[in-house]
Image (cartoon, rainbow, N blue to C red; front, side, top):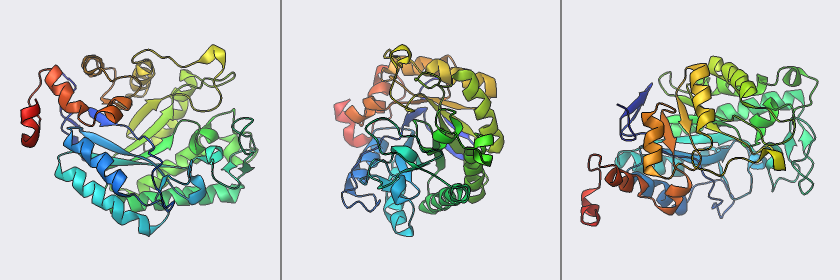
Length: 340
């Protein structure tokens, strides 16, 4: 029987357990140069010490104006690679594997003088109106994703995640709410995301998995639901996505009728439906901080990997505590054994 502490392998990614630290922005690049600093090093390496099987570095952007804020990480320059390599090597030394999320915020780039997007539609009444990218600029954006992935591979990451969720640029392209274009990228809403995946795969070793994060449901009037997300995910799978990271929302202000769940595991049914429809590995996320619940998600085969976000922000050693609670094999570092 599979459980939270079963090993897992997809392509060359071999994990000692099913616990994943999801990408969570730290907004901590004080120099605003996109380069990881001591905070990022301690943040990620401490979760490796804490027993996490797979760590995904926060949203890391392909150009300066692709950041949510100027305090975000970037991979638009070779100068940003060494600090990430240092983190990767330290995480590996503590027995964990590590990926990185590559992204562009699109119209949600708060500090950009003029955000860009598929269409000139602002996020809300308090946001800047973005400039619609030209067709050539969209193609250039695909190239920026390609180069960022190339640098991530150079840094030594074990997997790449492409951010197609939470109302950021790729999500903006595949959502009818935000893509009102009349060119090839409007006639086929998945074209941009598909080309980003293909460009990423061209830079990745053949045995390195590519993860695609999607919002499987939108929470605004007229937004897409699970049936639509299954269809565009099929396109992304065919383009080369090996694993799907299933979240939801982020596309706009939440309508009263469509609020996301506040109960534990509220997004797990979405992950299960994608898994069943596409026959692909999936990661579940969303209020899975209870080890018994997280273990059940794996044991019931609703997802292949479980992401613990807020719980791991509160406790870098969440995985060690979960192993103790579930009475699994002792994985505590010898230096901490007296505490357990």
